[in-house]
Length: 185
Image (tube, rainbow, N blue to C red):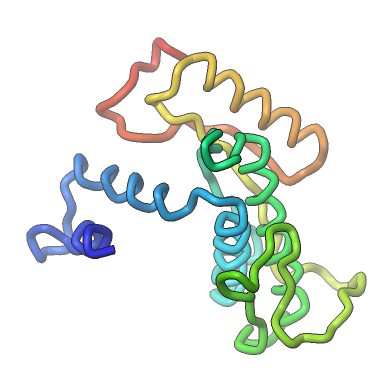
């Protein structure tokens, strides 16, 4: 954790971080966000945070990860993120007009994958006739370092999730601009 803290601090104290160091930070974040329950929770919290700031339309982006050693496929990764986003939007709608302080997500082992619920709410979600507090959509990113085969897999997954009306609205090319080559894609 000390490594992550050191990475978060600005090297020169001016608030600027050289480009080559920005992508080191993403690597550290990726190491912390590699199980499906954590992904689901982070996505839910991100949507809630934006809703609390008054955002009504949100597009998050993520590069789907394939981590077989951790039981994470690109498909399962996207499913977890989309479940979390949907749950965050549902919670935001329940708390619409409030400061969201009464909405809580379970922590640690109280957070089973696929079963996110507000702590102590006792509420049953009901369909609302009013507009949602926030509409959250997902953009899948192709990392410049990926092979063309992995990039194609991500684009096909995005099309499948889009066609299944799961909330995926686009694809982008992301990652360190000093790595990879446009011609690969």
